[in-house]
Image (cartoon, rainbow, N blue to C red):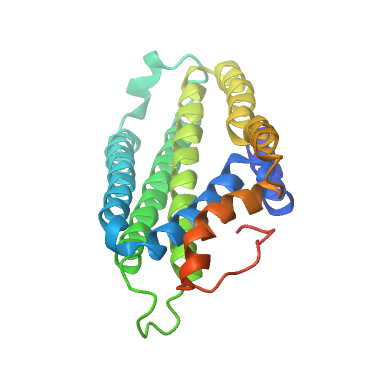
Length: 245
């Protein structure tokens, strides 16, 4: 568990210091460009925006439903009067207190995943309304960056919920002993590292492909999103933001 926590502390630091070296950072930048592109041509892309957000909400709803069902099953086991009845399927310690602690930790992981996906649905629902507001209207504080912030928060909560499932499944291996859980963690962390940092090769390919056009990866992505807006002047252009929250 300490290794799992340390990895995510390192990942947070990497996202803050060098977001383009992580999949999460590049995805945040892509979401920023996507929102700008949708707002620049709302008449043609409003349906696309709603369908995309609906798909994200459905994915979070599926994970949330799965998490609450599994947590309910675990709660039933924890509250049973004779939890030791499940000892035959456990290969590790069969002590009552140890068994109770294992099931409680699994329950907490699934409940945490459920709450994260609920938060993701909340933010994505808000973005579904905000994305269709004309930027030339008197919207006050509702700016493209405000919409981007909601979309990024929804994506972040979705990621937290998914990591909660990873943690819960690893804790379930603890029921079969500490060695299976240790092996599971040792396999999970390299897998997550590859999934979170494999964007480096795409950045290199992008740079090689776009080298003749000039500009960094950030500038290339934003150039495409801003191309039409620069001609129409419908939305004020901003400088690239090096730090992605």
